[in-house]
Amino acid sequence: MSLAPNPENPNPRTFPNPGSAAPTLPAKPAQVRPLLAGWLRDVIISLAVSAFFIIFLYQPVKVEGTSMMPTLQDQERVFINKFVYKLEPIERSDVIVFRYPRDPAKSYIKRVIAVAGDRVKIEDGVVYVNGHQLREAYVPEVYEDVRSYPETVVPPHAYFVLGDHRNLSNDSRDFGPVDEDFIYGKAVFGYWPVAKLGTLR
Image (cartoon, rainbow, N blue to C red; front, side, top):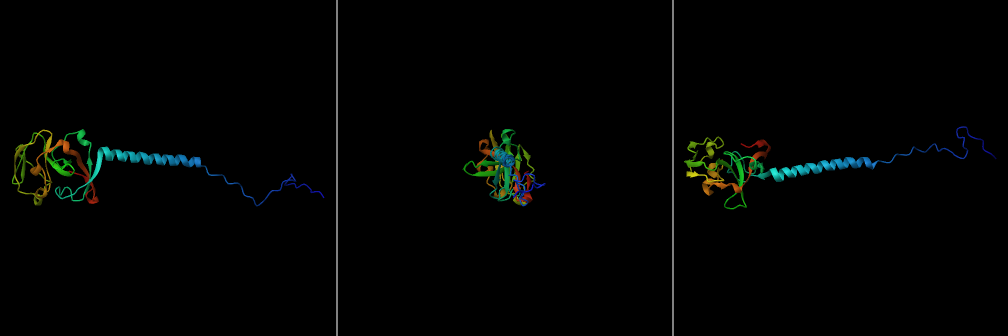
């Protein structure tokens, strides 16, 4: 018995399977790898830049204590710039961070009142620099005190510092001018709490 040729299938030895599906193309992992590599590169660069800023330029610190109220509250978080004083001099009214001269393991944050060569004295809480009364809008009346300090010439490479909360601050009235070698940053920006977000003055 012979089979007649099928006009739709001229080759009698092959039989199409109408239930078979078209083959699925395999995924191309080569396209995923460049995307993953690019994302990983961006993350590494971002982390490196952040580390550079934190290690060499800015450092977050937490304020502990009330001696700089109302400018800085207890537990407030600020960024200090550790590089700025390599480019510019320390100036009056700068808020600086330094190692406590009597215990360098501790850090203090205070405001610069007088720089090297200045004559500074305090009479009943009123500060005079080079014979002129200092106008201190950052010291509210409720934070003033009546302590006095004899006229002193700030020695070379040193700074006379006070806390804004005068009647609660341990500062140059107690431990004298601070040598520049103890100073390691300028407080520049508050970031927590959010209500006080902004540049420090």
